[in-house]
Length: 461
Image 1 (cartoon, one colour):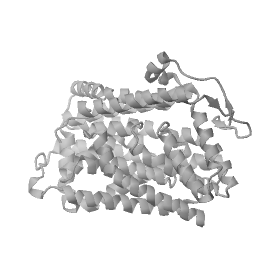
Image 2 (cartoon, rainbow, N blue to C red):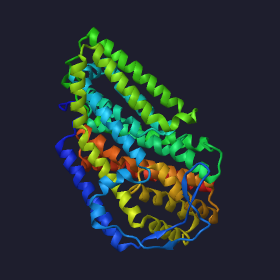
Image 3 (cartoon, rainbow, N blue to C red):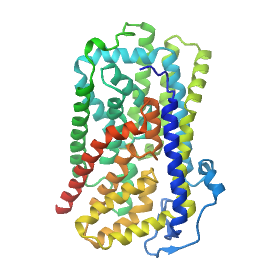
Image 4 (cartoon, rainbow, N blue to C red):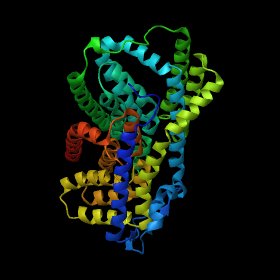
């Protein structure tokens, strides 16, 4: 790859900013067309604010001034729930600094060279393992943002193995999104949704495991078919930087060992609930420690490390603007009071649909809301109190509603331009949003068909 570190290409950045600016403008336009409304809220024993379905929806005064809309990318930092947003920004700044140090120290090229030499003869088996790993990270521990540090590594490895950046994004980012959506033991979607629904934690795991396997096979078939079509002949692949270096090898083992320990801690969060809110912090700290140890052991001085880290941190700043602009869309809708109005209209629509259509409607409703609210846990408290009574009227099980919610929340994370993780990953891989949509749309449509059939099958069972 010609790119160095985690520099976001100007073309990708400007394209993403333009898309987000258009979406921000359209959202602001909606505030003049949709009246403000509100459902009553209540606070749970755990301190979470949730819709109170015992009360009635009512129209209220709303709207947002032009000034507040223009400042929304800044004001969102002080809004409710901004702690997670700030944590994501800090996390990405650390990732940018460390990746630049790894690149300048030659460790990135060395790492990719060693991996391609070691696994080049069995690259399709390696592809299957990498896809399984990323899907498992999303399905079993709910990791999505935490996968960002590994995305450039997989993209670089994909190019070294004779494929392209799209294949690498599919093996990492797309796989993580698919795993997150299958939600086998995802604490942030399935776990919270089952808690709101009064179901035992992670009950119904057998059905979700079946969904996981089928989605994995579909994704793997999609990636393998594309990779075989575009792969370069072996004689055209890069052979540089494959020579053994004792210093870089020490650094590489330190990097792999420390980061591996961090991933092991994150995996423990599946059985240790106290770790679930700390996964991003754990990955950031361990990635920082791994990167520092690796470059110092490979011969870089502390002064050089500081300079490269700062340069890398500055190179990732464009991603911060993308995050703030994407987050401002939800902020605008909440400030104007139109989110609850849209939900109320959806509830009214569902009440006149046939039973078999309702479960698909609930799926598509979550898909639609995920365009504006990328946080899965935020949507749980906003939507599940409305979805569950609606489903009960039609005799649809709460367990099936949880699956529909997980499907609707997860897959579109790697498709909608309002998800900052997608835009950042595309920028790091130098892939435009339009190119990504064109490439991933066939898979998204096949996956939509598969998951819809799974929901209808669950309805019959």
